[in-house]
Length: 132
Image (cartoon, rainbow, N blue to C red; front, side):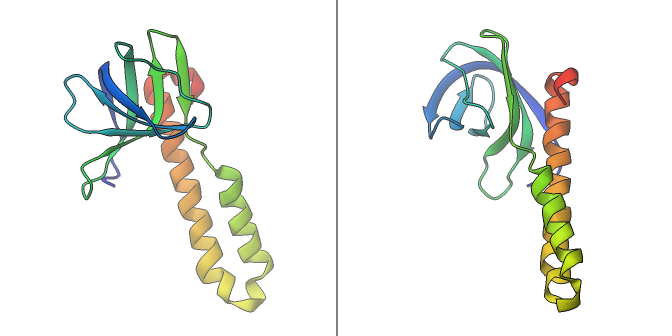
């Protein structure tokens, strides 16, 4: 991932459902395939005007969407931030710090999860500030 969040806006040209929470879509004028994974079931159709916030994956060429806003259907969704998981990993690492192993595994994993959660919240605030 590039680490830099950006927003893509346009009309849905095509989409493929991968599940009720995951969809791959193409937006007119955007060169990337968008992989959107949201906590709530997504709501979009061909022709809808949407905005997606996320980041590029330089290896696959995909754009990973962390939040979307569908202006046509007045829908909004974002990925699960997983902040509670991050806190849980850190607490487990501290509680079991006597074993040394959790310090090197759980605490860094928790910090990465917290950073990713902040990134998801930033993506959501790029689309709709009151939902971030």
